[in-house]
Length: 65
Image 1 (tube, helix red, strand yellow):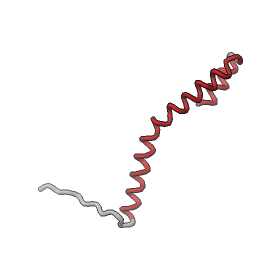
Image 2: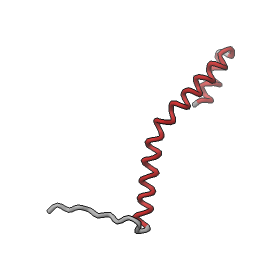
Image 3: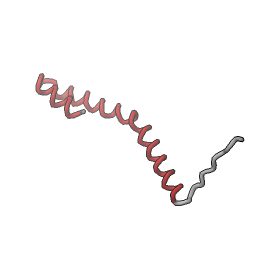
Image 4: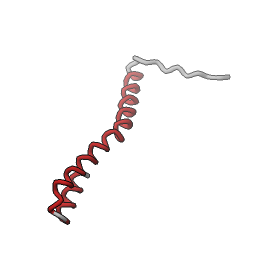
């Protein structure tokens, strides 16, 4: 995404290269926190599944009769 902004913007207006790099880096930094939550959630879920398969965790289901 960053490369598209820099290359595309430079093609249309080469004098804005420095500004385009700044904007692109800002966009890249802003995207990190957005995806971080999803990555952590998936990582924890996969780790939990591996622990259950190795009997490191036991699943206890509560049944209400």
